Amino acid sequence: MAQNTILHVFIAVLFLLSIKTTLGGKCAPADIFIGQTTWNDTLQQKRYTVLIANVGQVSVTDIHVSCDGFNPRGLIMKKPGIFKKERRGDCLVIEGGRINSGDSVTFDYINDFQFNLYPISVQCLM
Image 1 (cartoon, rainbow, N blue to C red):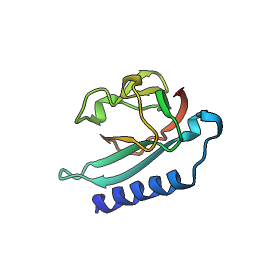
Image 2 (cartoon, rainbow, N blue to C red):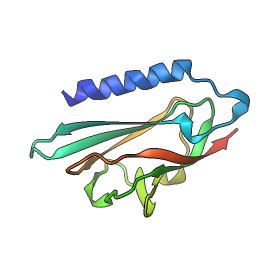
Image 3 (tube, rainbow, N blue to C red):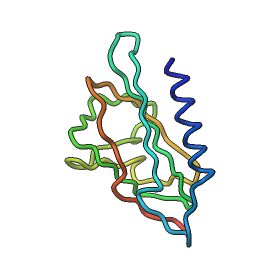
Image 4 (tube, rainbow, N blue to C red):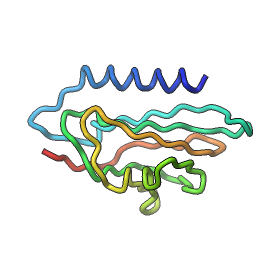
């Protein structure tokens, strides 16, 4: 079930990539797509899979995401540093590293409810 939902999110990202245009090599927080799916794990805990994708035309770094109330103790990481709380309401994606156009990162967290995550700033790489 969770695999099908994740597949649908990836298809949606690919669709957005096909219609998204960025003029003049500029980027904005709107070039970052954040999707979440929810499912119950084997212990019947609510688990959320987050996809953060660059749907713009240029590579970006220093992606900051609004993450009010987010508790990093619920993170399930395959790779450390994918999503790190910097300060209240501000989380950094892949330690400020680069996400090329069309690329994405994912991570999971466990919580009783879904957090409202949205991009607040990015830096363009030309």
